[in-house]
Image (cartoon, rainbow, N blue to C red; front, side):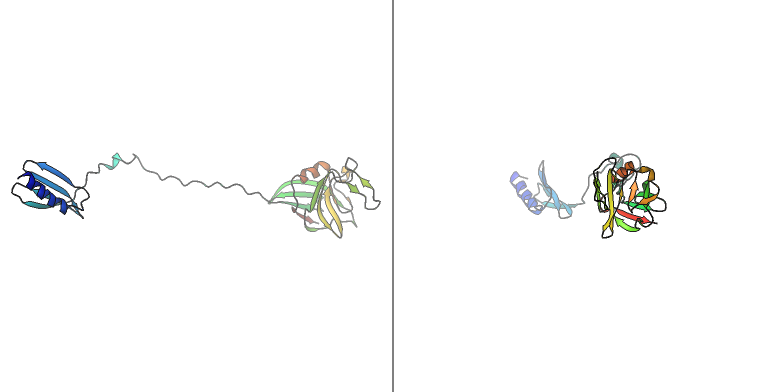
Length: 220
């Protein structure tokens, strides 16, 4: 078969395989071949010395995949554990509970008692009011004015208010507060005009742990 005839037959083969994903040409002694895939079939076009073109349909073949062990890790494959979500602990609300009978104030954090302090409460006729309140004001080194004489006493060891004050009730009936005292020996008794006296170190400790609007409950 001449080279011209071979090229003519291969040209016909190329046209048949124009949609082929892969086409190649093999040139041997006296013959040539074009091959590829047409849709889902594998086709070969053979040009021989006799001038015939043979269309040979071939079964598609796949290369060997090898053994799974060549690609997979040895041993049993365990699924990765799901990540543990860490949540920041939530702050528990602080509240104050004053028990008049116990002569003691309790500082709660959530449902847990964080601290408690002995107190002096209102004397008969000047009882400390019971009910639910909240901190409305607080101050360090308060200045005290005597409500009967108008005398003003500056902060210091002689101040009846001590080093700090925490007000929990302020209305037309008057002002009621936790505060320090210059007479710590009276703590545990009913001697005040309605306010709650505390040891000076205790009022300072509680002052640091409460804020404006901290709930205050006073029970008998």
